[in-house]
Image 1 (tube, one colour):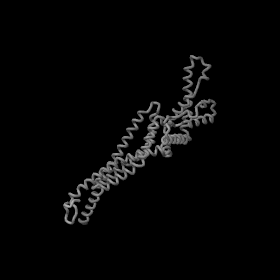
Image 2: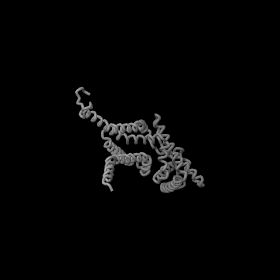
Image 3: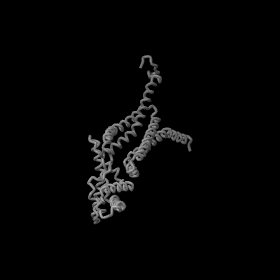
Image 4: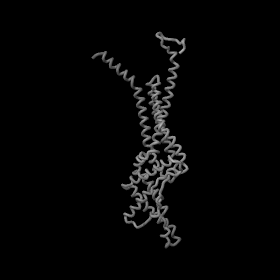
Length: 328
């Protein structure tokens, strides 16, 4: 403070001298609050992604209900049936048939065999023991994904549906079926590619960024919000703006999730069932969407309480005093 700064009686600094500090404090508080509002949904998304990519139990728990989803069951039946029919050969059965009649008869036999195989697969997929098989398949796939992301290789990540084929084999043998259709299916012959080998390095880089962000973003958001509120001159107004800002940022994240989901489903190949893929997306992003709407609700409630708090209390107290002064 300069020697000739104007002083109030009693040696206090005048309002003119303190105004630059107040303006700087207000600007710093506003910047911190803005950073906290932006970092909060980003930290939530990073935490969710880290949990889905690194925690096998969390992933399996998220996809476990899909074992009873009709769209997913239909997709599994189609994929397993396609994998089985790719190894079925009818050449030996058609040797005694005239060559001109073989194409039509092959088509007829193939359609009948496919229906038979699909029926057996559907009985397994809708059976009581399928959820355990489903969870085991996804647990193995997620461990493979985790290994690919933490290692330096480029091996593809697949969802091996062969345990379903093994169940179908046991069902046929228990039913006394003498038609041996599934013996030629290789042990790892029915797989769905979740992550292609060329995409592994790119996903690994994203994984490292997400892992770091999940550790840094949530505490950074909390520190920014706390510091901004402490520096704010009008804390009630700052609390209202912060609550509305957090709610708006979370709502934007929800809109972005819906947009990404729609575009991702539209970009899928025709051979992939869109209802099943949509069910997968909804199951995996369920915790994230729940967290987003919790932030929206908490932010809106905080802003409403801050807006209706002190003035409402003062008005109520004034009314009580007026009634007391008026008497009975």
